[in-house]
Amino acid sequence: MSLPRRPFKRGRVVLLLLALLFAAGVGAGQRWLRGEAARSQVLARVKPALESRLGPVHIGDDFHVGWTGTVTLGPVELPGTRPEGPPVVRISRVTVHLRRLSLLSGHVEASRVELAGVQVEAGPQGQEVRALVERMREVRRNRRPAPPSAEGAPRDLPELVLTDVRLAFERHGRVEWGPLSARVRREGPADASRWEATAELPGGGSAVLSVQQGEPGFSGTLQGRGIPAGPLLSLAEPPLHMEGGTLEGEVRVDATGATFSGALSGLTVSSPQLAPEPVGPLSFSAEGRAHWDLERRHVELESLRLTVGERREARVEVQGEATWSSEPRFSVQAELRPLSFEQAMAALPPPLVPGTELARLEGHFQASLALSGPMHQRRDWEVKAKLDLSELKQSARAGPLGWLREPFDYRPLTAEGRGRELHIGPSNPAYLPLAELPRPLVRAVLRSEDAAFWTHRGFDFDSLRGILLAPADDKVRGGSTLTQQLAKNLFLSREKTYARKVKEAFLTLGLEASVPKERLLEVYFNIIEWGPGLYGIGEAARHYFGKDARELSIRESAFLATIIPNPVRYHVYCSRGTLSDIWTKHVNELLALLYEGGDLTETEYQEALSAPLVFTGHPGSQPPSDEETPTRAIHPGRD
Picture 1 (spheres, helix red, strand yellow):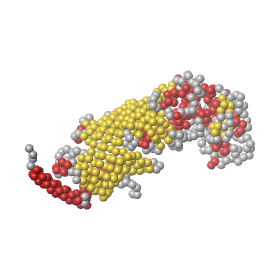
Picture 2 (spheres, rainbow, N blue to C red; picture 1 turned 90 degrees about the vertical axis):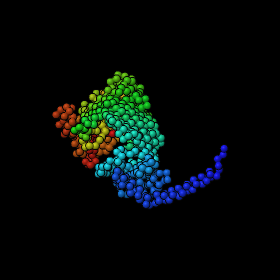
Picture 3 (tube, rainbow, N blue to C red; picture 1 turned 120 degrees about the vertical axis):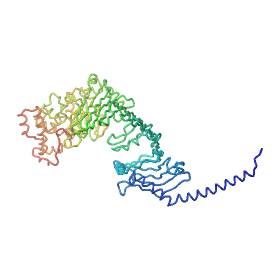
């Protein structure tokens, strides 16, 4: 059975005519919607709404209404604090997708808002972003509360989509991170809503933030997977060039506490302050949990485990708490779990490993640190540190540094390379055993350089506390012990980098575990530099005073102790023959320390104060001016 063909054709014509009339009407409507009148009406509602939340907003001339129910406008700019500077936020295009049913109900609602081409200019140290946040807070404080909704319940919030987002920072030049994309949406009723934000990060990787509002309070989870670590961490202060690396982690937070875990692997860092060559690959991990009571203003770090290296054998366990109920105070305890040198070396990238065979040292070492006090009073912090090398000492005698117990040949490192060879042993006429050194000389050097030498295990934590937490002039300096100086002189270059300090720390542990204190002190006196081309106390005594070191007077001993921090530079001053008044004061202050510490009798002290200093070959030289004299000599700060 066939349908009549004529009616069908007539129906198609009618539908075509209706479509043409609709299109003509839509076209006329589109022309009106794209006109200035429609733009003015939209901006009259949109701009005040934005400014009631964000402060001043500039909206550009781009305006378009699509026939599918979209409104596009832009660019949208939030001005920064600098009149001639760029806006703190610039959005190239804002597209609002309207809910079709809302058009029939008499009010306009958005189902999705898209922000494309978002540029954030953070400014120096993030000042512009902080100023924007403060401006938004001020606007919120001054805003009148909105009247309750006629429907009695909040409307559904639109999904927010961001594309091509870039963040710019000023870090000794402009640094940009991006592009990234993100999506934010809310699900469920207002009293039990769930927010979820997802982001695709530059170079790959993703992050997901979920926040749940419920009866007990809020809870949230932040997860990151496969995040390229180098570009992200390069934004930190101080600026460092970082490459490669992958960051993954998870944080779960609720009203009473948080659990967290994270891992960073394969990162390479390049910085002249760190090392001459790139340092990597670096691997770290952290996991722990914290609990807080906001009413009591108290937070407790129940556990934190930090590891270094891919094998995660170098572990530090941390606990602590803080309170801000009256005077904010804190306490933290950290413990380095027993660690062998082989495990320690394996945890470090090659540029941080000393060029010796320390990994062959048997046994384990461990350490602990306790820090507490008022948060805002650094000088009042209490520091307790302990380094345990007892197990290492039992097995290190035949280890890789055991050769220092016997005579050896040594070539000091100079600016031009390794210098002339010195024999550190009795066959060298300039060599002096510790037992034959004048006691005032030994005491003067220890008082000046390392007063706790006989009691510490390579690191003087009490001295470091004073240097780092309560410096006399608020300037942080180094605090190398005698053993650290010896490690640097024996094995390391003159470069001033953090990598050298790491190597120095491990060598210091090795020296303390392998060599008796008396032998360390003896080697120190016989290899350190006392002037240009002068190595060992024997050569120094001959050069400055024309005598055997065994015959040095108390005042001569005190003088020699004051030149150790920078013997080449100080030699220029003292080679003129007579000390300046300021340098004489430093020598006298050291003599006073020796007297007060019981190293000198009253008679010895008074005689040393009045004794002359006669330098070889300079019987009538003029003293240097005080402006050219070093201004610190006792307990000097060293890199």
